[in-house]
Image (tube, rainbow, N blue to C red):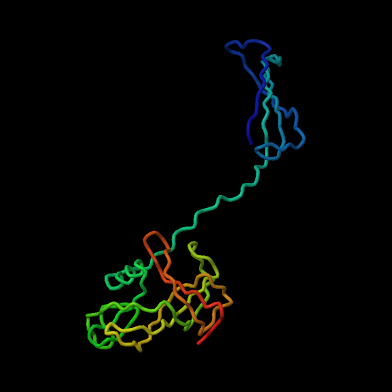
Length: 226
């Protein structure tokens, strides 16, 4: 509702001590109108003021526009940034390597076991010493799930999540590693129909915000499995 205009008429000047009464009537209602504000009706009311002798001393015609506002398209909200992984003293180096474009695992400096996720101790010999091993940017889907709920605004759904067997690389000593290295990541540029255990993937490191990069699995379009 919005006021539009008023018209005032005075029959005589008022005097101190005048006792007034007011009577309000609906003077007119227009046909339905469409304006820039919306669609509705102009409603005019008239207020008449009378003195103690029931003589008209003044009146006011007040017009309002009662309308249904135009439907507004909801304002597009910017997509919130992707939640960042939790980092610790033991895994921060791994994310630093990703930001440099390298996908790495840990190799025990004593027994040579290659492992992931990163950790403070070798699970085989309990050594604290380790080297960084750059891993191949390819692998095979070991398992996968497709998340539907709960939905986090930062992601598009359905959301495929894959567990990838990274192809064998070389250990810190230059020998072929036989240790299975598996990493969890989202897919990218891949239809949900391409998801399959054993499907080959290539891995790309992509920026998820100005200061964070993560690995993504791109499923082989030929559908090759191993």
